[in-house]
Length: 175
Image (cartoon, rainbow, N blue to C red; front, side, top):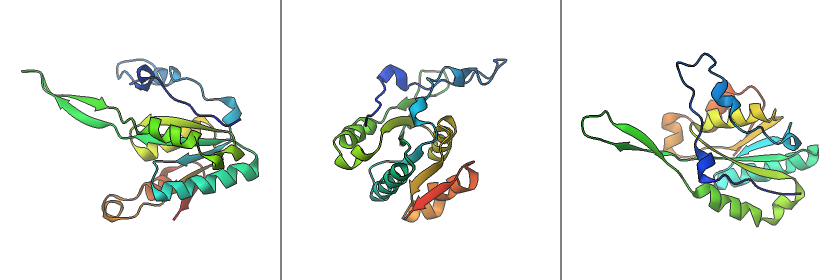
């Protein structure tokens, strides 16, 4: 059965590890466990762009052929906003990106996703790190991403290139 996963706004806050804690992994233990039905699935990065739509189409075919689930990951843009409170040092506050809900609704209405079981996972942070982290949590067989075009990718390095260098599982880059 196809499905998607939306998080309540209270669930969007990611645990932050306490640097003074004895066990630095304690913060990760509070994250809800991934659905075992999607273990060894295919992770795909999706942001609604043309290249991510191509990556999604490839990942759907890959998951369908292998009989596995599809884990669609949207790494939300969390815009740091500086809050200044008098003499206190500035505090950075994450402003959530509500694009995940829009993408989730679009995906839920898409006929082409009826072929495979799928979930939508929202994360915030560095795209490469979050895709690899989701791949690790779900013990994914592969991570599929679209290629980055344009000047920003040339200057700062593409997500696909950085992910291919650091990932512990196969990375498939779709042009």
